[in-house]
Image (cartoon, rainbow, N blue to C red; front, side, top):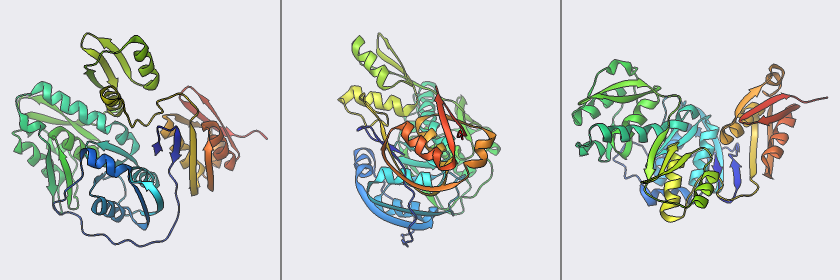
Length: 370
């Protein structure tokens, strides 16, 4: 899902179009885009149409745009994706693809992770925390922090991949059996430091890792909450501090002798670092005051799915009455342009004779009054 700095929010369109797209085989030693080149490619517009399994759509995007996409094992690769985009940025296209696949995205350095929202919402944060922890625990092992690719051939056992990765850096996994057995197709990750690539490979099992003692790591459960903390070596005026807190309301931002102590999701911390570094940001939250508007195009989707997508975008918790749950399975097609959040929700809920209220972070859905 995309939110632009022009305060225009776009919920992914779902357009059912029949097409056929043939892609080259994936698994060769790909040269993935990174850094500024990747950022530029993600903002470039594309036009395409798909009706094929998710596995093939992802493969075509990898091959055609040289981007590293990793699909979480819990996302069905055989589900048929029907999607058309026209002059839409590659990033927006990826977000529409994720929405259509009942998934979400996380950008972990140069890897685009397609997975369940409960994982993608924390993945970059957890990876950054793990890397930070390793630097504190064993700072004198530079190989741990040097970006490196990891590849595997079909059929691959992720438990073996992770053990070999650790062993190559002189580490031992104490409880490898806590990584469930699975078999993966041929694949590859773009060059990442050890903590990042290990976090990605474990996330699909609902797992991550922790450094326990010298040269030893253990497998642990993926956290339900995570907060990345850092200090940005930049002093700001009290007026600018107030503005920063308004722009990034979910971050904890406190001045100290070294600069600004910042805590929150890694994505937002990274945005504030960019803003303070060069005065620019591609934050997914508006950076100036004003009305936020939304555009939504949907075909044959349940009202429940649309409400959940909007709630996920706005970080709202949905609470629906029993009667509302009996009605919101209705499938609808609609197009809404330049609407406020209230107007958008009204437009959606009325399709199933429902109503909504928002109190704090709770989006309540009930049956509309007669």
